[in-house]
Length: 288
Image (cartoon, rainbow, N blue to C red; front, side, top):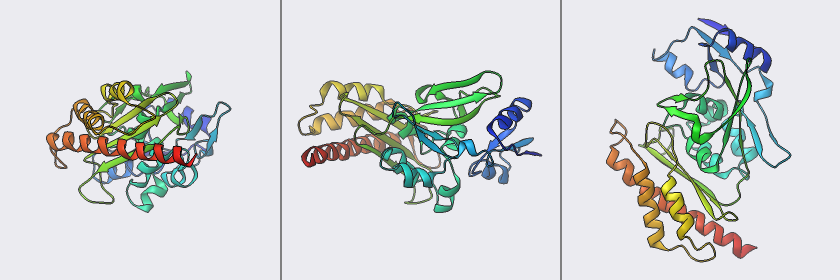
C-alpha cells in the first residue's frame, strides 16, 4: 500500500489526479476501522493532515461560514457552537472525546454513510459542499444533491472535498438521535430541524432512515403553510409534522432496529425537536 503525504492543497489535488483510487484520510476514524476489519484495503492512502488549508474556517463577506474539511468536531463544538447549533449538537454525539478530536465533517461527507451524524443538520441548515479537482477547478454542490447512494457521494473520482458552506443559524436548530446506548453509538435513526423565522420556513434532515440522508419536503411545506409564527404551537400541527417526517423515510430492518421502529422514532423526534425549537423561539422573543 502506498502512503501519499502532500504538503499543500495543490499537491493533494495533483496526487488525487495521478491516482484517482487513492483514499483520502484525515482523522481516519472511518477509513482505519474498515482497514482493520478488512472491509476495504485501498492501494493507496492520501494523507491530508499536513494540508493546512483544510484545517480552519472563516466567515465570508456575505456572512456565510466556510468550514474546512479538516476542522475536527471538537473545534466545531467549541468555536462554532453558537453559530451552528444543530451541527454542533450532532458533533457532540459523535463517538468518544478521542474520536471528536480526530474526526471531521469532511470525513463524514466523504464516507456518505446514511447513519453519519452530521448529514441531517447539514441538510436542515441548507449547507453546500465545496469540492475541487486539479483539472476542472471548484464545484459547489448543495447538500441535497451530494448524497447519491449508500455510502456514495457525487464527487468525481479526481475530486476532493475542501469545505462546506452554511449560513449562521437564523433561528433555533436542534438535532436528535436514537441509539442502542447513550454514548459512542451509531444512530438507529436521527433527525434535525432548523427554523428560519424571517423567511417563515423550516429545514429538516433525516439520518439512518433511507439509502441516503434526505429532507422531509412535505413536512417542511406543511409547516410553512400551517404555522402561526407569532402564536403558540398547535399540538395537532406538531403531530402531523411528525407523521409527515415519518412518511418521508424509507428505512430497512437491520441489527440496530426495524424499519417500523425507525419510522415511529422519527415521528417522535420530529415532534419533540419542533417543540424545543418553538419554545426557544418564544423565549428569545420574550427576552428581546
